[in-house]
Length: 148
Image (tube, rainbow, N blue to C red):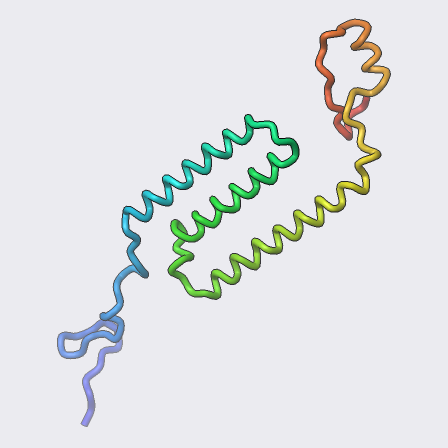
């Protein structure tokens, strides 16, 4: 009348466990995929360094940020296994990325409001002293919070 069962949760030879058909890991990624991803990250790193030496104005920052976003997506997709995970986790990742981009966009929009009040050179008295005593000295940037 009674059926045999175990209280420890371990399977007996007569009764296999319910989770024996699942592998021990979630998924295995081929080594070729990992090598290709690592190679792409290295190439993007070299491109980031090369763009630093090319003067394309303020666009340098946008190129560097774009490459960083692509690299972060590669790391999250392949090394953190987001590509094979639940779609909800991808939604969270994309949502967070969108909110970071929005935050950066609002910060960039705000910079035009106070651009006219920024002082990028030496204070006038210091510049006069440098011009008189050291005409070949480079122009230093005035740092807020320091006494001029």
